[in-house]
Length: 105
Image 1: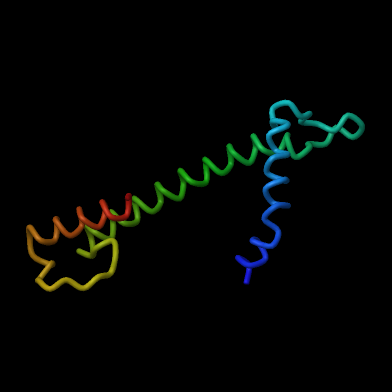
Image 2: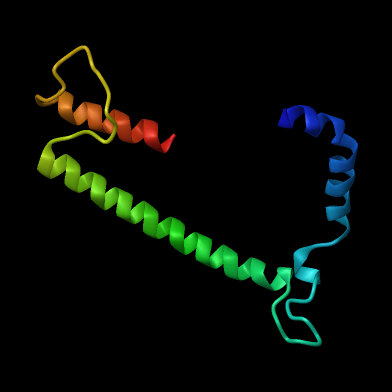
């Protein structure tokens, strides 16, 4: 249903997107002249910094947690069925390498 609404309003959406070409966020004031509060343009660099930091922390946590699970519990990153005994070496290592590769792609 959302797709149909988008198609009906396609011209309005395209016009709104064209309006964004007329300015850049860097050209807009970052603080309100009267109150001194941050404007939407002032929030964008802060949000980018925090979003980048959160992404790094989540990625680091996931990497550490997955590594601990692999080493201590002899598990894989993803739960999957394989038509062979993946718990013995070298299959265990190959399965983990393939899952890491699939996860990153």
